[in-house]
Image 1 (spheres, rainbow, N blue to C red):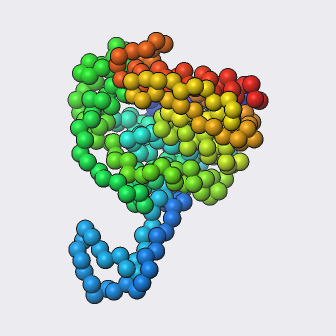
Image 2 (cartoon, rainbow, N blue to C red; image 1 turned 60 degrees about the vertical axis):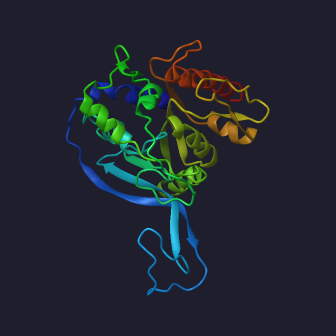
Image 3 (cartoon, helix red, strand yellow; image 1 turned 180 degrees about the horizontal axis):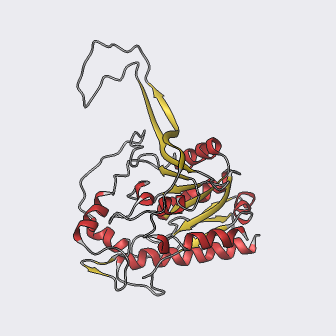
Length: 309
């Protein structure tokens, strides 16, 4: 029954897109969670200046690899808050509003009494301090992402797509993207630290946030349900991982975990959503192919969940 109620609530958010009911917030704020501290040996010399872009590190510390969390708690909140985990190339802002200014999922559900914890994963958005060594380059890739997100096949929009077609909204959408300067090793530890801090909750994940979401649910008893929108990563018990599915964007493979860990996913409600414009047969379009193989892989995971319940 909990799964049915939660699913119905999430399915109703698009119908509420124009709603602007007043919301009473009893508490809101933000905090970092998880992460590490690097400490360089020696004694800090506060008279030595190398330059703003490159400091002398001797004796200094560096806090990194944490997540950044915005939270809002409404009056009369449901007992389980929703924790929102973004996908690749994005940050938590994708849950808070749409490019044309309408309420995002976190706000829509807040209006229905669900507390929200919106996460910027380590190395993304406002959690930009990372221990990973990387180079950020201005790669022109917006047409690629237009296709990958199935808005259409550049420069044409898919027929019936609900994404706003004005140039201002598309520009804002692309400007919400953020560099990924993480090695992704701290995603799950950060979500685990958040679980320990806030207690029982429901994970709401999207795309590349799907895999750390599965792992957090496996590792943390505080995760009481998972709502996953088009997960980009998949888990299977040892010995039951299906063959890799090849595709134009590199294909997709499952990740093995011990059976006792995988069974944790069979003990909680899971709601999965995949959107439109995903073909059933191979395509020469990058966006089609990227999600065709992932939809096929999640079907294997669903069967595996049912078989091992």
